[in-house]
Image 1 (cartoon, rainbow, N blue to C red):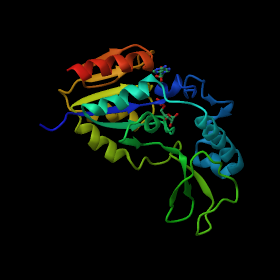
Image 2 (image 1 turned 120 degrees about the horizontal axis):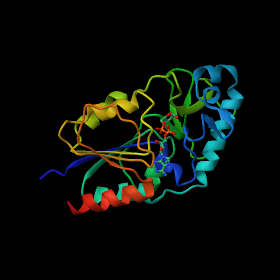
Image 3 (image 1 turned 135 degrees about the vertical axis):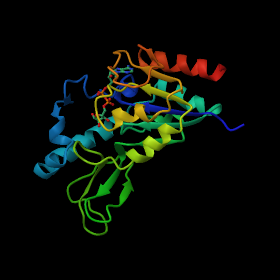
Length: 231
Ligand code: APR
């Protein structure tokens, strides 16, 4: 018997209890920065140094935080299920908790990307990117992050993965940023769907079989995983 496939969509809320501030809870300010100034192609065009400084700060912060019980619980699911995590988060906490199949639809802090064709991507770990750091072709390196207004290249893959789910779980996302927020609609009609968030997100969905767990990720996720491991 093939193993059942669980697909999990995660957002900033799953990393909140690890100490990474969520985006909208901070009122559109990330550590004092106006997000549109630091997370958009326009912001990059205007002030590259500020953008790099912002992401260098976030990368340094990432080095000092740890996965939490929700990340670990999702990794545990792999003992019984095929699990694919589609995350909007740019942190590496799912991987550090042991999840082996993570799709980062909004990019990754631990990678840089060239601004010159063929736009190569590089592993940089937790080190800074500075003005003057260039690829072999001479292109300035930028964070490997999908900014506001940029296309989401992995979206088609994410939709396909979601359509194949036997169980679909959403943890810690306000479901307001598209196209990721629309993923729920790609899930098959009859598969069980769970949404874990302490502030029940408003869901405009054709699906009726959605079970809400209005709880923090570190409470709701291990609870759901315990249930799924027994099913
Ligand atoms: N456990 C679970 N959920 C939580 C917790 C917690 N401890 N704390 C907060 N949340 C929930 C909030 O209630 C909210 O619904 O996490 C969600 C965070 O929402 P956003 O800050 O909007 O984050 P996200 O949905 O991931 O944003 C999507 O927008 O900022 C851009 O590209 C960025 O990937 C990001 C995207």
